[in-house]
Image (cartoon, rainbow, N blue to C red; front, side, top):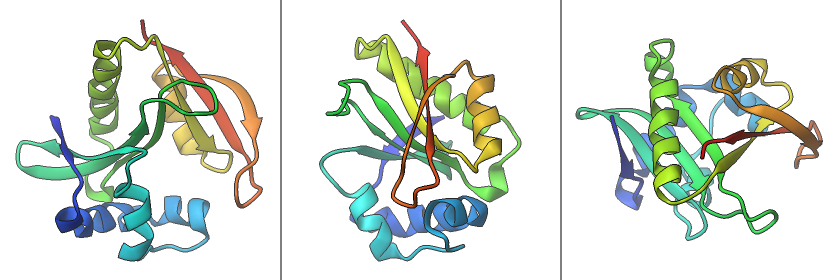
Length: 153
């Protein structure tokens, strides 16, 4: 498993990844599907690192993260999503382990994530990987985001 940068030419693959998870899209945007223009700002910017999760030559997911959040100076994992067809095989945990190893190599001793409060499945997943809740913040849709962190160093 490895990461491959998302580019303008591969953005259509990111769209397929995102749209294979309609439940998440409803939590995030209130719609089951997104458009490619929605993803340009999210994945083609100079603030976050956006990459596909690949297993051999197969695109199985997408990851998007900040090396340093300007609000707290910690790395934040903004999105780790496995394509709907490949969920349930442990790929999410494997992809997270690869990300964590990368953060350790960069000298970080903890990482943070935000999980939409409605997304119970994601909360269970992150807690199973050792993330601990530390506060709730508000989001653009006012539903709330649970903030978690994990010490990795």
